[in-house]
Image: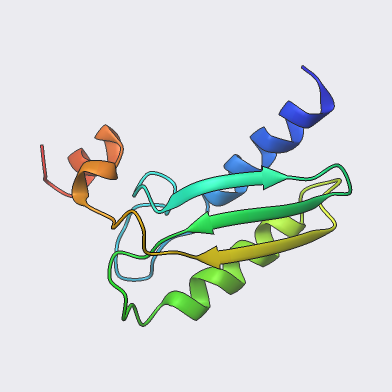
Amino acid sequence: MNEFLEKEEQVLKMLKTVFDPEIPVNIYDLGLIYKIDIQDDGVCNIDMTLTAPSCPAADFLVEDIEQKVRSVEGITKVQVNIVFEPEWTKDMMSDEAKLELGFM
């Protein structure tokens, strides 16, 4: 596996350890991560959304993402961009998340 794919896999692994305090499913399986872009200089740009625009956990989630992703070897900076388009729906969740939350 090349170095870029390894780095991307490690970033994904870290994102799967970030949980919304009110929902027992990680943010990746919830479908909140829209884009991960790792630059050659180690800057990782992440586009994500929230389950609701007024999510009280937004600051906590961003801080947790930045801290965990920055721990990946080769990542020098993490920029989390909160976006609301496309609007998040339950259909964006993984099957595992739907099952965990009782939607299947």
